[in-house]
Image 1 (cartoon, helix red, strand yellow):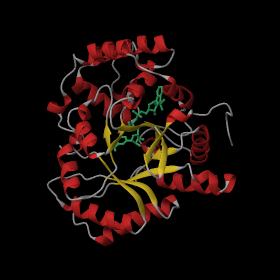
Image 2 (image 1 turned 90 degrees about the horizontal axis):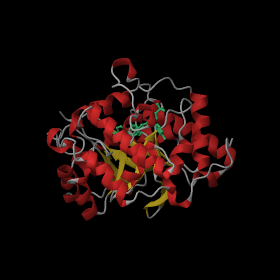
Image 3 (image 1 turned 90 degrees about the vertical axis):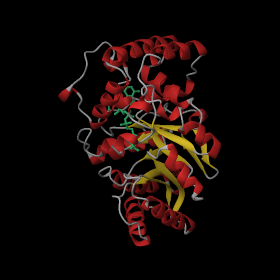
Image 4 (image 1 turned 135 degrees about the vertical axis):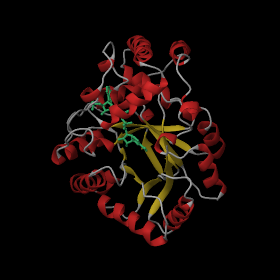
Amino acid sequence: MKDDPAMQLPEASTLQFTPDMRICRLLNGMWQVSGAHGRIEPPAAIQSMFNYHEAGFTTWDLADHYGPAEDFLGVFRRQLLAARGEEALADLHAFTKWVPRPGRMTRRIVEENIARSLRRMGVSRLDLLQFHWWEYDDPNYLEALLHLSTLQDEGKIRHLGLTNFDTEHLGTIVDRGIRVVSNQVQFSLIDRRPELQMVPFCQEQNIVLLTYGTLCGGLLSEKYLGQPEPRGAALSTASLRKYKQMIDVWGDWRLFQSLLEILKQIADKHEVSIANVAVRYILDRPTVAGVIVGVRLGVTDHRHDNARVFALTLDTDDQQQIQTVLDKSRDLLRLIGDCGAEYRR
Ligand SMILES: NC(=O)c1ccc[n+]([C@@H]2O[C@H](COP(=O)([O-])OP(=O)(O)OC[C@H]3O[C@@H](n4cnc5c(N)ncnc54)[C@H](OP(=O)(O)O)[C@@H]3O)[C@@H](O)[C@H]2O)c1
């Protein structure tokens, strides 16, 4: 099943995420199989999962609402077990999410939803359950988290994480004595909101960040360098549409082109790609454990290019050059709010 025997990530690609889990710092993001990013063929997708896993991209980010993502993980896990035996499963880590509608959070509701993910993924325990909440005015998120902690004590969940929580509410959760190991937030050269409040708080509390949007759906790549502003049908995935809106708030297409030009110069100097520079920049931020890169399984494949990020070091000169463009951008914290505020407007 190995498509390229030479393709193997270096040791530097891994990180001790928790005492019991070593992960790949580039996580494979599965929102891209949800249907909003082009048609995915299940057999080709599962084959592609083998290719990622065997090259060392062994950590997956998914969610209960990413279409068939949890089912794909279940099928892949079963096939991996059949093909390679129990040992191969040791490296595989799947981080899912639970994204409930606001409302009362009873033990039964929480338990049933976790049971569903366990069943779909074919596991007896979730490696990491990342919890999302839409509505801070509804305090039931604390109830849900307390029930999740009980399920963790009972062995159904290894670790609890969050996604899109802002610093204030992360603080409320910590104050309630609920132990979360991570928060998944948007973090990129365009969206640097986490640096202001989230990162310092996480440093203090020993919580790590998993980041998304780091490539802006692919906009941070050579493909868009020197190109006219994409609009309408040219923004062909949900991801491109989401981050194009972010760029519009951050600055404009002209400023974005200046950023791509600087990134290209830096990329050429190090003989890597713009995507490598954009990912390395975020991997180097304090508290960032991993960057999630969306994978359109069986449609596109950037493994070889993305693998090069682990041999790249950005120097002070590179950082300064990037900063000259970033200094011209708008303040997203002021315009949008802290991490995740865009989901709660
Ligand atoms: N918690 C949340 O609220 C939340 C929200 C969004 C995403 N996420 C997570 O983050 C994951 C990533 O999603 P995203 O929307 O943030 O997308 P992204 O990772 O910023 O972009 C993914 C796209 O970037 C392009 N790409 C990847 N590597 C490349 C390279 N080396 N060179 C050029 N282009 C490259 C590919 O585009 P092509 O396929 O077109 O080539 C790929 O589909 C999701 O799957 C999900 O797991 C979480």
